[in-house]
Length: 227
Image (cartoon, rainbow, N blue to C red; front, side):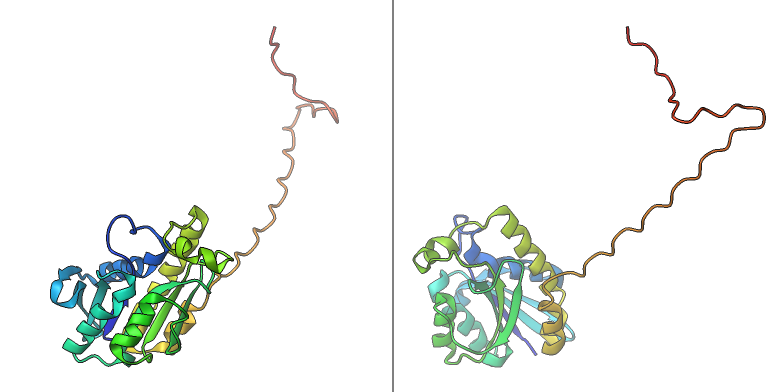
């Protein structure tokens, strides 16, 4: 079961629409679906909301400490409400996943992600769940810092939004700890191909009424003069 969902990002309007804030985007929508309202809790260093789902309390968090200190907020909420690392889901942007795809995993390394790095340190464990929202890679590691702090292209933004909508359908399963069901929904990255349209049947020719002369083959109806 998941009792704490933390979305990662950077606070402030300058970062609101950048790739690094994909975790914020996801948790904003999760809060809307759950009817929860994120509010600043200075004692927990972030925006926090409590929601009820499947008969249990779920805490939503968006750290306001900037990305490289995300663990301060996540660990504060986890400690206060006695939430184990295995009951934490961290939603974050992922360079190694293409836009339009989302991956769910438990544990593992931080792969250089500064937000995960600090959560590792603050929780004292890597054994939390991660929902990795694909933002793609610029192709050059020297460009990564600029890449994550810029807005995605219009096509990538659409792909990310569609992937987020699909993964949010797994929210009840995530909260209930039904990770197999959640994974099946989340990892289906491509919708089923639509069936080709049926060919239209030719419309039968209209037979002339009795006594009316049929037009000669190849004859066309004359058009009015344009002089």
